[in-house]
Image 1 (cartoon, rainbow, N blue to C red):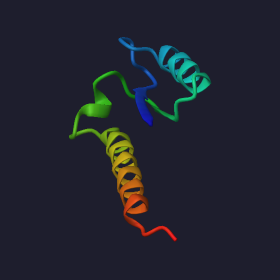
Image 2: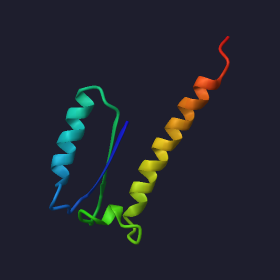
Image 3: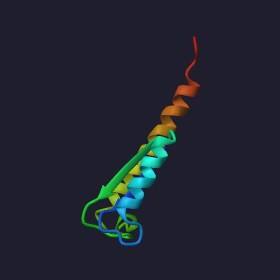
Length: 79
């Protein structure tokens, strides 16, 4: 899965570019989640001292949860 986080006001990687990438990846069969964080720029989502950082933490947590779920499914006895 791909979890994309972009600031709404990002001048370096504009949200429209990320949206188009997400659409292309989804069309190719990838599982993509896109979060556009309102009123922040390029570095805000990765700065732990900014509120936008929570979007990155949520994305990382969802990947970890998915990995744990897959691991649990593999460990279940079949029958």
